[in-house]
Image 1 (tube, helix red, strand yellow):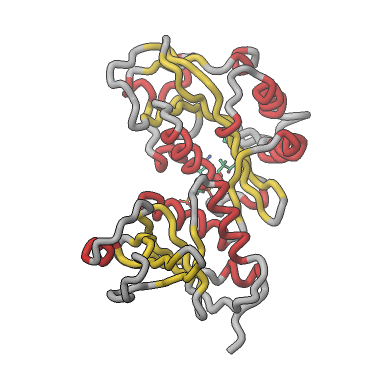
Image 2 (spheres, rainbow, N blue to C red):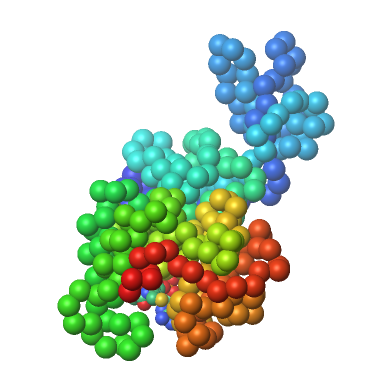
Length: 306
Ligand SMILES: CC(C)(COP(=O)(O)OP(=O)(O)OC[C@H]1O[C@@H](n2cnc3c(N)ncnc32)[C@H](O)[C@@H]1OP(=O)(O)O)[C@@H](O)C(=O)NCCC(=O)NCCS
């Protein structure tokens, strides 16, 4: 049977499955006859590379450093399917996940750092829906501002249509130009090259403690409630934790943000800039959160001018 060759169909039908256990790449000692349970091998002029279970490498006394999770893309992908591996590796690269691709006769296989397996699965699941997350580039800004205008054309506070340009558009324009702008924390969701979602987090403080203030976040109105907002929120939390940020604060509906681990900020010692915000001012404490924090939250300067 000829495998799938249409890239969109391939991406939609991609069912990533993680094999049990950990896998390693090792160089097979020159001159030693090949033995043991080898999952894949590549012969080069310099020597033989083998991929095998970590325990098997240990049993055979082989040295390795890269310890990987093995993800199989369960589609019958024709070897000539142009674009599948490029799309997969580009999406993983945007997420900062390194990946080695092995093509078998039936399936493509990805070896990603063992600790990144779950996150890689999340990236692949989104890619199956055609969604790629990546850092914003300056040339994306007009499209992001347009998307933000659409997303906030109905006020999230009153539920009523907004007359004129929503204030979030001007705020975002100022945040892009502000000292508190952090490029890695301005993230877009893209479908087929179009920007369909955006979230930004900027430098903020509680007393002397630097942390993040999240917002605005917006998803194209016709594509809301399909998981794009959630994907942007989760990506923000992962990137923030990896950057050593202690926490993320935001103003929004507790019913939405609770699912990502946000709690009323006051329960972690942080007072909102305006007392009336109450429990709508929320905080996600990341692993570096110092428990003795007490103080009032201060957003990036452009928020102060609202
Ligand atoms: C809020 C927003 C970013 C969420 O993005 P999204 O892609 O639609 O959200 P997801 O698909 O990831 O999540 C949908 C889930 O969140 C819920 N949800 C979405 N917005 C919500 C809100 N304001 N309050 C409570 N729940 C909300 C949905 O009911 C859905 O729940 P379910 O999974 O149990 O069915 C998007 O709806 C948006 O751009 N809204 C307009 C702008 C805005 O309000 N921004 C946030 C200001 S704080």
